[in-house]
Image 1 (tube, rainbow, N blue to C red):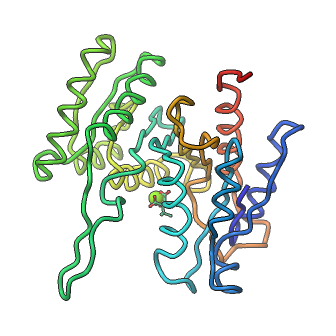
Image 2: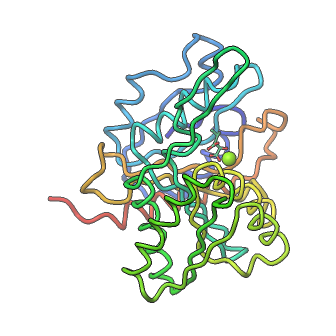
Length: 285
Ligand code: IPM
Ligand code: MG
């Protein structure tokens, strides 16, 4: 577990109560407090420990006193990349919607830079990267007998959009029972507010998924209640022992930290998702 900063430790305390007994818990001290103390938010040794664990339960990291990116790119995005957690699963049961967000590519790739007055942030999409995420979403929709909606912006992001559509259309032939449709990301934001019932499983890229999952959280139980599972679902291709990183969608809320006001529902749900994922693992010898 990596409780992190602000309300992180208190919501993780609550979440630990839903974990079954007998788990061997390892505490990782990482985040803003550590950065302010030592100049390092997270180390390679912490990464190695996490790689040797079955799963990671995270609270929240973030602090206005720490420059942008140190905690986000340095901890969360780094973990998603290094553990190759390519699915970010965000369920919103109140809405009957599940967002499957691609979690290692898109504008989060880290490709880009600054050249004088020009800044670029490259939106990287690869067929294997998109295919594995889209396959996971199809499997989920099939298992639940639900619709799958691809959300993108194919009318403007023509290169990435065409790749996502091709991969989805191609995959659809392997899942003849799953009804598939498509929505532009801006229209999906509108329809989510007006008529969320038109969606079941949404599959989308990293940045659209980031935005739409906060929108969905706002429509559902609030940011405090939303949870996410960052997964590498198949044991066969998982690069480390760690099957996933489970976290509430909310941040550190420093203004209410330590006051007993934090909503731990998201962290508790994240811990339940962790237990479910561990239990769903095929038994190893
Ligand atoms: C999320 C968060 C992260 C993201 C931040 C903290 C890096 O907003 O998990 O949705 O942008 O993915
Ligand atoms: Mg977000």
